Amino acid sequence: MNVKIKSIIATLALGAAFSALAADPIKIGLSGPFTGGSSPMGVSMRDGVKLAATEINAKGGILGRQIQLIERDDEAKNERGIQVTQELINKEKVAAGIGFINSGVSLAAQRFYQEAKIPVMNNVATATVITKQFMPPEFPDSYVFRTSAYDSIQCALIVEEVVTKRKLTKVAILADSTNYGQLGREDLEKALAKKGITAVAVEKYNIKDVDMTAQLLKSKQAGAQVVITYGIGPELAQIANGMEKLGWKVPILGSWTLSMANFIDNAGKNGEGAIMPQTFIQEGNTPKRKAFIEAYQKTYKVDRIPSPVSAAQGYDSMFLLAAAIKQAGTTDGVKVREALENLKEKMEGVVKTYDHPFTHDDHEVIKIGDVVMGMVQNGHVVHAK
View (cartoon, rainbow, N blue to C red):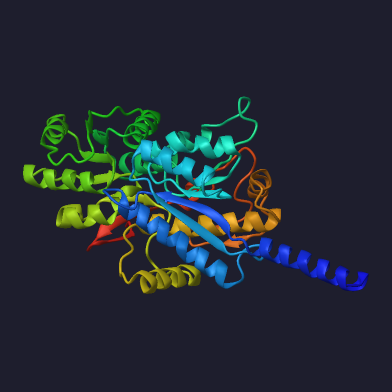
C-alpha cells in the first residue's frame, strides 16, 4: 500500500470519526412530576418541551446534532428529585436540565446541577428564592435559570387585584404545608404588609387533605372577605367545595395554580370565577400561540391543555436553551451558561418575545409586565374582566 493510499484511508477514517462524534445526540435531562397531584403541571411541561425538541430536530437539531430528552418522573418528592437529578448528571451525562415543577424539589435538587456546572432551566417552579440559592460572593456564577413567574411577582398582582381593585381588606390565606405553599404565603404576607394589611386568618393544610372545614370556619368567623390560596389543584378544589358546603360565598384568588385542570374539574361550578396570575392563557391571539395550541392539541389529542402555563413555559425554555447551545458552539456547561446570560438572537416565544432575557446577575426571564390575570369560566381559563 503506497503512501498516498494510506493518507486517503487515514483521512477517511478521521472524517468518519468526526461524523460519528457530530452525530451523537445532545442529551437534555427532563424531570418533573408525571404522576400524582402535580401531574397536570409536569405532563404539560414535558409535552411542551417535547414539541419544541421535535421542531428543533426536524430542522436539523443543534450544531448538527439531534436533541435527546432523557425523562424522569420526580413524583413531586424532594428525595426522588435528588435521586433522578444525580442520575441524569452522573449516569446519563446530560448537557443541561429542564423542568422542576415543585419548588421544594427544585431547592433540594438543583444544587447538583450547580456543582456540576451544568445549566438548569426551572420552567414551572415559582418560589422566589430559587434563583437566589447560589449567589455571590459564595458562588461567583449561578447555573440556575427560570422561565416562570416567581412568587413575589404573583403576590404583588394578587394583592393589587384584592386590595386596590376590589377594595377588600379582610383577607384569609390558605396555604399548603409544602415549601411552595409556605414560601408563597410569606411573599403574600409581605405584599399585603406593603398595603398596610395583615391577614385576618392564616391557615395551613397538607397535601391530600380532603376536608378544609376547620380552616374555612376560622377564616369565615374572622370576617374574611376573600380567600387567597397557595397550593396545587386537588387541595384547591377541596377549598372551593368546602366553601360551598358552608354556604360561604366570597371570592377565591390565588397563585397561578388555580388554572390547573384538576382544580377546575374537581371544583366544577364551585371553581367558577377563581382568579389567578398567568403568563399564558390558552387563546390563539398571536400566530405563534395559535400554532403552538394547535400542535399541542393535535399531538396529544386534547382540547384543553391540562396546564397551559406549564406547557408554554416548557416549550419556550427548550428554545432558549437551544439558542444558547447554538451560540456557544458547544455543550460545555460554562460556555452555555455564558451564552444564556448574553443571548444575542431575539426569539419570539409563546409566552413572550425574548430579547436578551438573562444577564449574569438576573436569571429571571419573566417580569411583572409579562403576567396577566386569568379567571376560570366554563371549565377554562380566560382573561379576567
